[in-house]
Length: 373
View 1 (cartoon, rainbow, N blue to C red):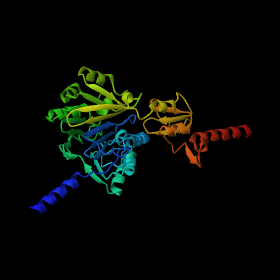
View 2: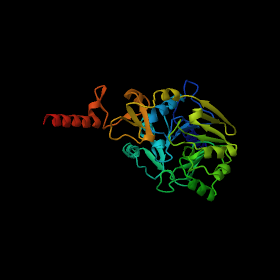
View 3: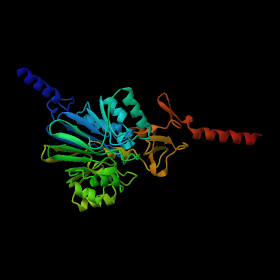
View 4: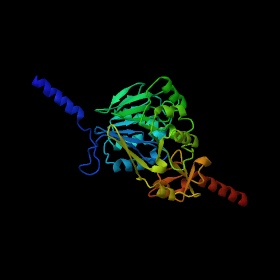
């Protein structure tokens, strides 16, 4: 009998031991209750979840914004992440996945089966296979535990070949505190969840697809009964997110709105009954904006995260252009050089590798030949 009791106690402590992370100074490494943190990473999405001494990261945002993700994780004292969940394979949700996996010693990853089309997706899959990282494919109605009083369930995933509609829609519950994360799920997906009679009643709703018009139907918003809505979105983004229609629906329902472009990083703390909210300005986006100009010789692509010389043959569409005065400002803002028109030679960028330069040289040679022969 005593031997059996000893075995049960041993198993209990093994299951409940901390999985390893620190929070700031000594004495701050114990997080009571649950913390859900909406990280401020520009036009993308990432949430830090801490409960029962486990650390979960839901999405990573774009690779070009990884510096800002890393800064905030360090701010909250995170040095190891136990589980990475990727809602879907668009780069504004998973672009920095390979970096965060390497830097934060991640051994467990939960993802949908629907593949992405980007090079970052291919790099992620190659890394998962090469390093033999425990990869879990989400499936409908799956339920996972995050320790005593806390679990998360999959309400929808892999609904079509479209990456947005394949988003993991996930409900997180800690005793009486509840959260609904929706990725970039469309109205069709959300309506199907309601038709299937799944429980979407929550305290906090993460608004789908950064508040686009293709998501957040009024009936869905109403049926969640949410008191608070979270919108992860970049300042002055080219997509017009969140749209006026979505904001209007939330206001009609009396739902309190938190937005990263206005509020910065948002920390939600729950004790299993009540929730508290704290806005923290960790990233100085004003300083980032000061690096940008309305015109300049360096042109970056807001979507790809690549900057070009103004004479590059691969310049982005007008609506996706961001201008900088020099290479340094572009790189400080998280952009990387174009392999075609910007080439490093020592510590300098060699403008003579630009296709535009070659074209000019050909024109000069043609002119010389014409004038002399």
